[in-house]
Length: 130
Image (cartoon, rainbow, N blue to C red; front, side, top):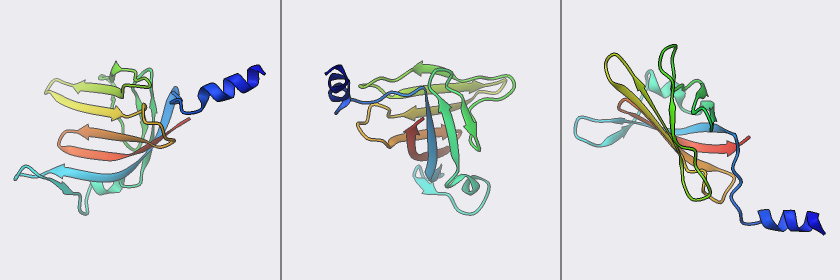
């Protein structure tokens, strides 16, 4: 009887995970005319189809795309919930450079949309809970 209650309580509920595996589905660059154009051949295009893992509690991205280095570490601004996105910011110095990651973990589906902005490059795709 209690097993039935556990199973029925999770139906329709958003499952929150400690980490997510994400795949890059599109990459855009901020153009001089203010639009976000698709990436052509070059450095950023090698990330198309790449994967990374995001740790929800540290905010660290591990894989081809990263949001940390030896000195600068990400800061989780919002751990996310069944109503909020996971939000992570990394500020690099001495010249100000910012990475921003948002994962819509509240979405009631296995695939959770994400957006990662690094300088003027915008990566989007889907994440799955691990």
